Amino acid sequence: MDTFTQIVVAAISSGTPLLFAALGGILIERSGIIQLGAEGIMLLGAVISCMTFIRTGSLPLALLAVAGISIALGLVHAFMTVTLRANQTVSGLAMTLFGTGLSAYLGKSVAGTPIPGSVPKLDLNFLDGVPFLGDVFGHLNVLTWLSFVLVVVLHLYIHRTSWGLHLRAIGDNPATADVMGIRVQTFRYGYVIAGTILIGLAGADMLLAYSPTWTEGMTAGRGWIAVALIIFARWNPVRALLCAYFFGAMDTIGFKIQLIGSEIPSYFLKMIPYIVTILVLMYLGWRSRNKLSGTPQSLGLPYIREQRF
Image 1: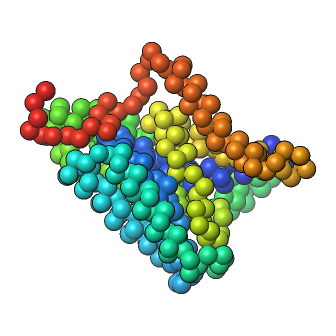
Image 2: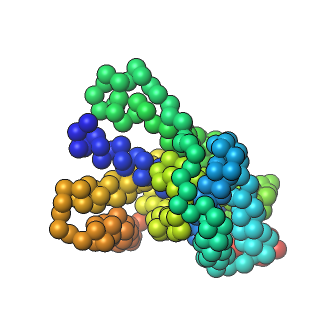
Image 3: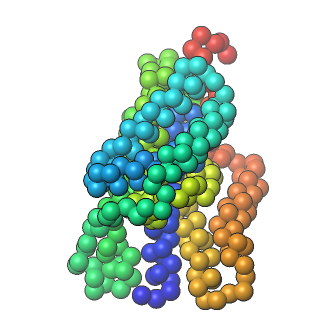
């Protein structure tokens, strides 16, 4: 396997958790709700999947446990932002702080304990003789393939279905959507919960497939990177895939530089993906300063049905 192929494989592995989190964030923010709790949700998803897998040895049960805690977190965030109309930024930040603290507490019992298994791989043996494609796609795990499927499904759902049109209407102009008979609050609850499940799954994927041992704060800011990826992708699932793997490639390049014996301190090399993220955000902000950014027009604004405009 040549160096370029190794980087692509590692980029997919590193970027898949980010892709799950970005897809979940896109689903939530398309409905008009800001989600800044990705870091805390990912950490809880990781620790819950670790605890469940170690105790039961069952991957399906671990994923179900992650879905359960994610649904609970999604309900809390939806109740705060949709029903109580609380500040969405504050609610998301509170969820990050809560998830970070609770995951650290729960993870003490399993810290440093390797999980008793791994995510099964889907072996496409007919690709083994194909250059590049066989190395990259021949032996990916099922969660990575699930992320590919989700990208296609969400893209078609958002842009090619009437339900997706409803989603975009809720995020852009909930008052008009309400007049057309769309239950804005009900839909927002559903999308917040569904998106939170995907973010929780991002944490589970990071532990089960990327780094199979729980350590406190193991996401290392990837939840915030996922928030930035949503902006990079302009709330588009296909672009989110490309952006997630771009970040994964930057992360991999820093590791490769360490392997060749570079004298650059490892702390600086680990900063590469985050510095690139900041620079890309600055560039996109400058380039699109006079253009439509693709942001849902009612993002962050609570919908008050009785309010008149």
